[in-house]
Length: 237
Image 1 (cartoon, helix red, strand yellow):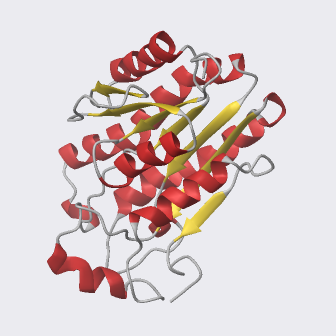
Image 2 (cartoon, rainbow, N blue to C red; image 1 turned 45 degrees about the vertical axis):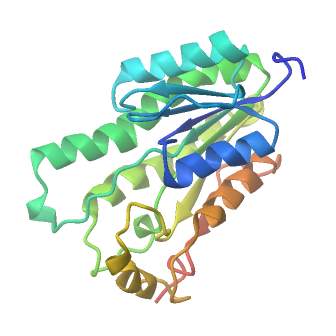
């Protein structure tokens, strides 16, 4: 396949869990992938370029986009997967918590997406998809999480706003809103509690989120969608 014709996806938070699985998922779709996180190691796969960096830093976004264009010649999709979740009572959040969560969840999304959009437009369109959390739509007293709702809720609103702004220019913008997913982020001893938060009484799997993102990737008439993959959390309790 001519490199210039191969579609290219950028995936943030790509070193483990959902992000690492998304890299594999896009490769199976035939995309080249630029994978970024603070700790990511070089890839054995020639179709995967890894870029280390803190996504909260605007310079990382610039490096990731420049690397994609230099190595693969184009950008078609941006997957804003990087996120941090700090569950604390509201008055216990520290200035450092606020800076970390807003930096990764909001600034990371903003800078990378803004840098990438001109390259999507140059291809005649593309796709931006972000991973949020169902706590945005369904707050739960058992999981105090104002910073998650403040930041990921902002992403959900921005998803709709961008979808409409770019609707006639070929860029689709969507989000996947997960419940709690079984990843290395959650210690095994918390699984029973986390499973019980979902009406279906179990946690989700990484594959559930990857499948949802790839559905949106291949759904040309879907834009501005917040796809809940949350075992019924957003429907009620």
